[in-house]
Length: 177
Image (cartoon, rainbow, N blue to C red; front, side, top):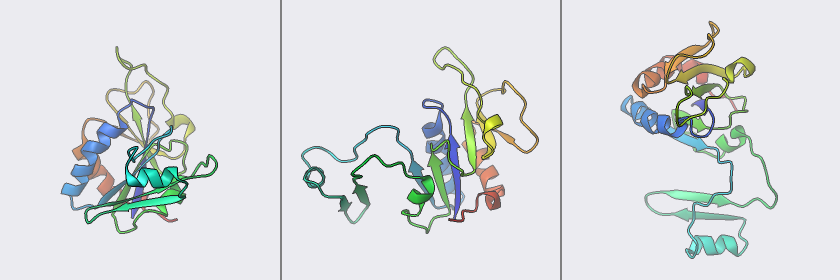
């Protein structure tokens, strides 16, 4: 399996890119999973539902399962920062790619998402000069500084060409736990 992380600030377009990239990868015959980092308390369960009630009653883990899908919720007794590698180990290994959204400080190869400043987006500095794990930058415009020769500039709005690039560079993203 191959793993690539997409790192950028909240609102930079990571989710929108992955919404386009997943079908582009699937059209190329790839099986894709996603690991998403959340920065805040979140809930995939609804108050009042049985699984929510079980969790509220103190169950450490609750798995919901049907003939179409399953979801596993695990409660930590203390705040616990899990690495993406620890979470990948819990995922089904029978996929071609795991696309990781977030985990910008991880040691996974990553594509930095960068958008130019605009009326509704405050520009931010690029992270590639300080992050040796960045292998490419996906941007919506020209970058404020040149890329070193070992990095690639990708068009943030061209998921099809990004899928082609990922597949052409697949060996760079081979995951070894």
